[in-house]
Length: 428
Ligand SMILES: *Cc1c(COP(=O)(O)O)cnc(C)c1O
Image: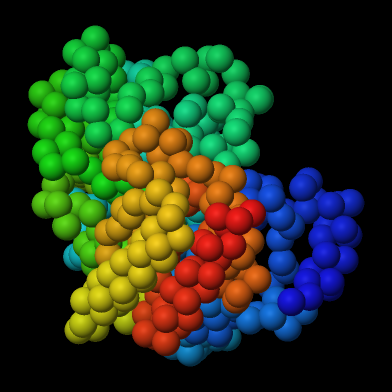
């Protein structure tokens, strides 16, 4: 397969964009190769600028749960666009968006729309601090909540892939009040809460940015109870899991009510939209009602919200999550068997249509165990898969995402490619 045109564009890119990419993991450094440049997406597949087609298991890192170029989404965007693209004044679609979220996520009694997950988590934390009058926050090791200063501490994912522990340019003051505890370690969290002054615990209820890690039984319930006991707000960062692991997200799946929720990715239908919301008494502390400032020129952008609302409508049709579960099981079991058949240690973590095959014996229950994976072997596997027409996330520490556009045949192709790529990775 030739990626000649991609390579020539990448050369140009590197001269004008740091690393040639607008988000670090896209550079494929963690898997020892260069990126391909995408021309177009259609359903479950993407085509690069050299005309190579791939079954896509990234789905733009989660948003594209309906696949690429879904006709109803494109229509919703076109219809909205015919009336303009942004106004900086309220539009009714913003109200419908908030009403819709509240009806599916009852914990989001009030909602504010923003343009990225990073903005949602950053704003939710400022609000939690403003509401409680406390400074400290707790996050999990390997938990990723966007790239706000105070959250770039032990942040998994992109940082993990590049081997950067936190980030340069984050002043001590911004990181000092961020306390990091292992994921799934309730006792460690409780100890920090007991020491006092904790405004919020922010957690991915299903971790997706250290590879996929499932909450242990009782963990989320324990966090809920401990936060309530200490007057600390519980923030579920559902930017990835919202509308992914269930229509009502992880909070519906596990039956837990957080104080604040952040949501993104799928809610923009493939355009930039995200939101945060929660208890009315907390949300009413936001400007213009209250003293906590938060704003955005393009917040609640009508095109993005129209696309998101259409995606939410489609996901609400009968059978969608059952179908995603079936596809997830087929892919997860097939990939795990393929890697093990090559004689490589592997374990699978999966919830519905998001999953990670770790190249280690497992079980993977937190970031420390995730890091026992053989990332060099994973890199070889990734390269083999791309050669064979499968577009995987270019990092061991990311989840794969399946869409409703994937067919059984697509997944059979992926699994066949995995058998060959795992064998090739052994020899690599
Ligand atoms: C993707 C993600 C974010 C950041 O969202 P952006 O839109 O990339 O800023 C935050 N939290 C979680 C859990 C995410 O998966």
